[in-house]
Every structure is written in structure tokens, then in C-alpha cells.
Figure 1 (tube, rainbow, N blue to C red):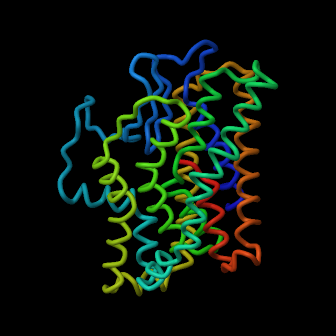
Figure 2 (cartoon, one colour; figure 1 turned 180 degrees about the vertical axis):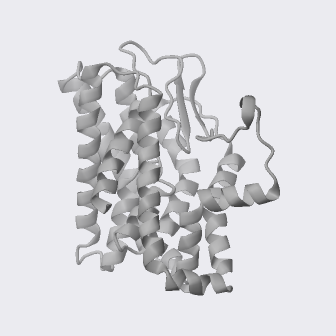
Figure 3 (cartoon, rainbow, N blue to C red; figure 1 turned 60 degrees about the horizontal axis):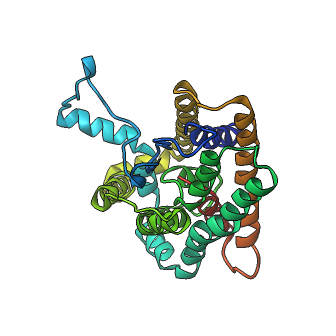
Length: 315
């Protein structure tokens, strides 16, 4: 099941990027990658980074639903089951120790916002533009560069760290740090590379991050003081298998959504990206894991796993 999850992860990461429409000429009026961040490149109003929702829940006839408190609670638990479980299983001391590991956390963020754009994004796009100008259109090359400027994933690196037996507390802390830092660093990097003004709804993004990560973990921590903790511990093997099923569901859903909405690519660009993106992901994961598990880093194997996943993933 883990192997299937990792395979689907590669496909979903590729297909999520492929959702941006392609043009062979100048940048189209709008090219978007709709995930926790929505990035729009436009000829008229420059580059915008916004926090559009990926999923909206609607009632019959297309009108927005008005669920009861019970329905809202059920929806919250179902959407955040995994992170609530993480909050249940982690001790508060584990979270505080992970947050206090400034050296490891700083290096993970350096890889995310330093190594990726400057050692991967710029050389890759410049090299393709110089030596294979017909391989990918300009909007797709710019999309690759934008991809390297993004923070880590909100849920996926935590899920994969847990499935791999890594340090979940480290992964959780760096998910929050990366996405908070990304509110400032991603626009700065895009401004550096594209020289365009950037609009960013700061409070909206912070609110979404709190709702997606901090609130579910806080609920799980609160439940540790109740009989729910004992039940969760007693049936830990069942919940671990259930988490793997959730992982497969999330990845498969992202994969299906990307293809059901159309890729907007010709066959040549699609084949190129299906080659480049999995290679980038696998190569970065192996490189970062080798780097963090080295004796020079002096971190535990679990921390090395968490650092590799957090550093190699892009939202």
C-alpha cells in the first residue's frame, strides 16, 4: 500500500502542475495552479498570489450550503481526521522539542526557499531555454520556476513521514514554518525572478493555515486528556492502516481532479513534464535524505526522514 501511495504521489504531483494551460507565445491571460496557493500570471495585471480554496462545499442547485453545527463538526473531523490523529499521538514535549530544533528547521527552510529556486529552478529553466528551446513553452518554463519557489505541502509530507516511520513532530512543525514563511518568501522570490507586483491576502492565508493544520492538531492535543486517547492507542494498528487509506484517497483524488478538468497540453509537453517532474521529485527526495542522514548533520533517522519529505515537497 505504501508503494502504491508513493507511485500515486508522483503522478499527482505531476498532474497538479499540468493543470496550468499551455501557450507557445507570451504568457496567457491566466495560468493557474489551484492548490493552497493560487498563482496567476497575467499580461495585464502582472503576477498575483492568492489563497483561493481548492474545494468548495455546495448544496443542491449550486447554492452554498448552510450546514448545522453537527454537520460542520462532522465535516471538520472527516477532513482533518489525520491531523487530529497526529495531535492525539504526539506528546506536547515532542512538539516543543521539534520546534526548538532551530538548526534542523532552519536547514529545511533553506532547502525549500534557497536550494530549490536557485540550485534547481533557475539552472533547469535556463538550461532548457538555452539548449532545448522547443521542448517546453515559455509559460511552462515559468511554471517550473514558480513551482520551485513554493513552500512545502500542508498535509502530504506529514502523512508520508508518518507512513515511513519518521519524526512526525518535526514534519508538522516545518509544515507550519514553511507555509508561514512562504507568505513572505514566495512573493519575494517571484518578485526577484519576474519583477512584477504581487498581491497577497495575508490574514486569509494565515487563517487557512491555522484551520488546516494548527486547529486539528490542537483538537487532538485536547483529546489526549479524554478516554479517546486510550481508545486511539489501543487500536493504533487500525488507525495506522486507516491513515494509509486516507493517503491513497487524497493522492488519487488530486490525480483524478487534475485529469478530469483537462490538462490543456499537447502530447509533447505532457510527455516532457511527465518525465521531468517525477525525476525532480525522486532526485530531490534522495538527495535531501542523503544530506540529512549524513554524520555531519547529527540528526536521528526519524528526523532525517521528516526533513527529506519536507524539503522535497512543493505545495
